[in-house]
Image 1 (tube, rainbow, N blue to C red):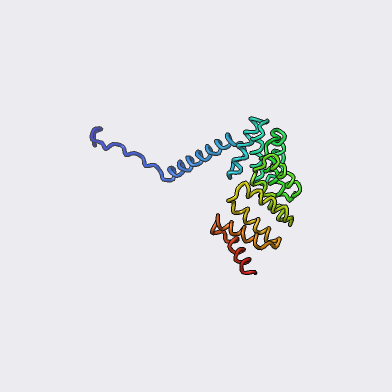
Image 2 (cartoon, rainbow, N blue to C red):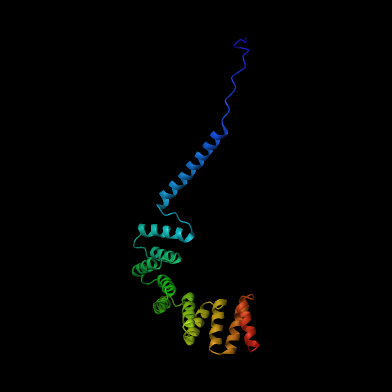
Length: 219
């Protein structure tokens, strides 16, 4: 019989692979739960999935902190619009207008909402307010031009597109729409000139290229 000094030391017990797996799964579950708790603390029950959703939560917090901040209401209104929440967007943008009546931006966003809802008359009224408050609002003139073009009010479309171009002469899209308007009015040479302007700024603009070729070939 071996003495205590010469006895082999006790062998360490082997940990079961199943136990290791269970411990690993528990750690994953704990980490996942921690993430959910953190998100719940910061976002409540709404976890943002997109940039637009994150903006809504961000600007909702801003409005809550500064309820009389017109810019915060404007940003929240536009964020709602991006999510397709048009009723909420209109509500916030009208609040912004009430709080900051001299700002053109909420009127512009409100026009976009009305246009998306098919309320064209309201959209035009808002855009007219925009250019009254900010006579150099290029995008408002461009939007007015597009609406008048779609309504086949070509004289008004030309006027709006020209004003947009006066503010920003190198905007290819405006020249393209002006070219299409002239084409609808059967003013071939003016249409050609505008399509050439498009290609000056965007040589790869395929629609302008095709339109120019069509007009020059008399098709």
